[in-house]
Image 1 (cartoon, helix red, strand yellow):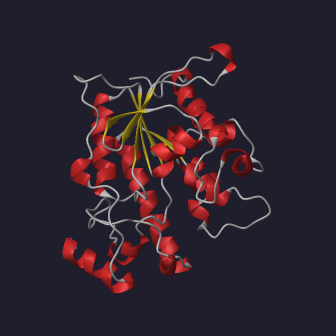
Image 2 (cartoon, one colour):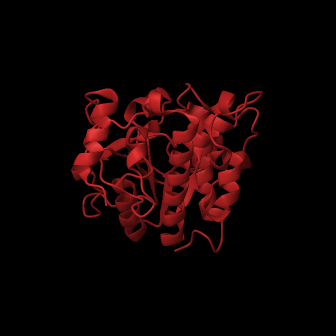
Image 3 (tube, rainbow, N blue to C red):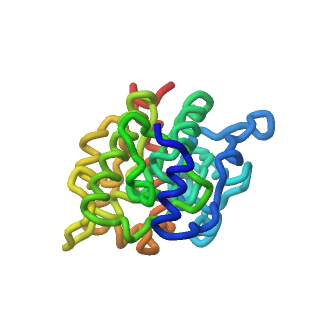
Length: 264
């Protein structure tokens, strides 16, 4: 097993001092049921559900814990988009392979009716690509920002990041049979009209949906690949505009209509 100091050293050697951490594992706690209960769905993901993005899209939420926002249940009365109640934890640039990903999902599976991972960008945490090993999928990382390091975006390192990320998802899917994935970031980077994605083939949207079919809430169920990005994204990083949030809410609401898969 590689030690944590060796991980930190590889980062310093690559870029010098890293950016400050926007979140710390010791601060990550699920809502206390004795203080307001829990929602129907726990959604873990990167920055898409941060307050500033929700507010810009006029999606109402309230803070219930550090890094956790609660979005109340909405019916479809009045022509709006129905959604279940959601506790969303948004961790900026969350690497799939961070130990917190595993620990938060494992805890959420025990206490929430439904748990969803908004699967992050394959390349978050890529400054540690040389430290990834097959026998330790989820690892502790130094306290810093895990944004993509452009110098490490190349064919060789991309293959390693995608391969390791897929192995992490297989471990999650095999351990938590009711867990669902939304491949939002991957769709943003690979469903690109008239362009060839630089993401390795096995990490592209259609391939991962096929691989994890039973665990996937498919964005293409409610839109087409040619207009997905234009209709639902407000920026190049894939943050949703209001139509994007409505699409995510439709996907979450669809879990209630599935039988034999998400029921607990």
